[in-house]
Amino acid sequence: MAGGNAPSHWAARGATARLLLPLAALYGGVAALRRRLYRWRWLAVAHAARPVIVVGNIAAGGSGKTPVVIWLAERLRAAGHTPGIVSRGYGRRDSAVCIVEPGMDADAVGDEPALIAHATGCPMVVGADRPAAVDRLLAMRPDCSVVISDDGMQHYRMARSVEIAVVDEAVLGNRWLLPAGPLREPVARLREVDLVIFNGPASDAMRAAVAPVPAFPMKLEPAQARRLDAAAAQSLATWRGRRVHAVAGIGRPRRFFEMLGAHGIEAVVHPFPDHHRFTAGELEFSESLPILMTSKDAVKCRSFAPADSWEVPVDAVIDDAALNTLLEKLADGQSSA
Image (tube, rainbow, N blue to C red; front, side, top):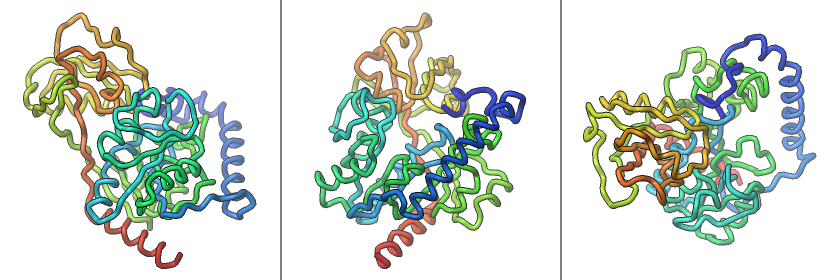
């Protein structure tokens, strides 16, 4: 819900946000108590047979976790690991544990899991019960050497070996907890993770807030656009100086539109809520132009999108030092196990 779909009062510490501070204090107190109960083992923690890497955030949506999960899966595989992935599957029809099969409908598994499974080819399981999803994954694929959890930073019943926090400073808004602001946990929580990935610019104050945790910038670079109804690919330069319809149902649609603009494309923008369930009619525009959309939207629109519709994938570009830090953490955890 962050970014373009966020409540307006999350952006600043105005009157509405201040009125909600008592509820934010209650939310923060309950969340802190719950976390302590897991830390003290008064609530049971489920340990997996393989290391679990959590890729999460402290804000409500829109921080850029999905590209990081895809980057991580590819880099771990290149380093000799056999990664598997679990996710809650936000937006799917039910919450039961489910194996993600190639080509499954996004309504059945969630749009982000459908995208991640397609992009990585990794075995993947979704379910609201994250430890049960991990167990199903490892029962299905005992050769997995490491499990990546897409989100789940606040799912403390699932033990984790490494925590990666993805931070988009623009999404942190007024830095207050829900519902007064967008934060699930306070900014101080970032000092307890193993690695921070900054999506977009990070201020000196933000970098100081996460120190001494290793922190690295991430840049999202567009790959070749892929036509939804055919095996065709083209550079974004194809549309330079041309008008297109730009469709984005993500946490921060403006980021996608700005990326197209930076490539000289005149975008007629069509922002939709994050995880939006598209219908064919929503892609029928009065002006006949090519349609460019995010990968997250393409997995939901492929079966009914007009002929001249294109997916614009993005690749996460992250310094190799981030991967080295992660591999060291994994090795340390395994040697001490």
